[in-house]
Length: 213
Image 1 (cartoon, helix red, strand yellow):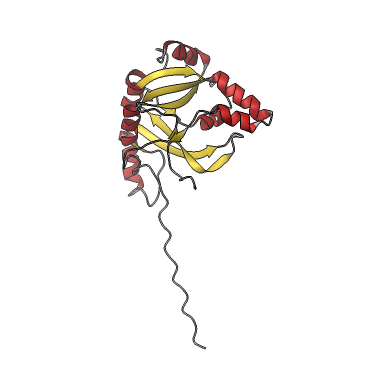
Image 2 (cartoon, one colour; image 1 turned 180 degrees about the vertical axis):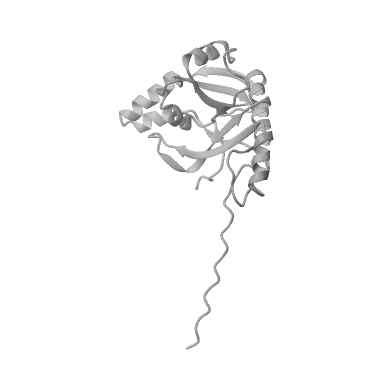
């Protein structure tokens, strides 16, 4: 069965959904130790969360990029996750989906969250034909994420390095067996309707009128 272009795939339970971030050790290590983000974590800045482990690996280079050496799995409440999605807008203007650029910019300024759909990645971090959700949180959403929605924070840097080592060794089967089990998220009806930027349908071309011999 073909994978839909826009769908949330995530490790989730009845109450929570797991998202990933990567930070420098000064933030990531105390966050994992205490189960909450430290005071140096700025609640007034935009923060991006990703339900896809492999997209996070693409973004942080398996935890090797400067400032992203500590990879965190952050378990948050589904209630908070869905609140953010309901109050989010797309991070980019899509002609034929938004009424006009002015209304999209107005929505972008007012929304506490924004969504990007980027190509999902395989174990070699190559792009796949379907998309992965990135959810940007700012203002009220960022504060709620840190202080209300977060259930647990786990340092998964060792997992990232182990999977990476298996990929480099060419053992993709073993690497795949270590990945978090990300399954389609049971989204309530209509949750993503304002965030799935499907391209407008192309008009059908009229069949040429046959010439009369």
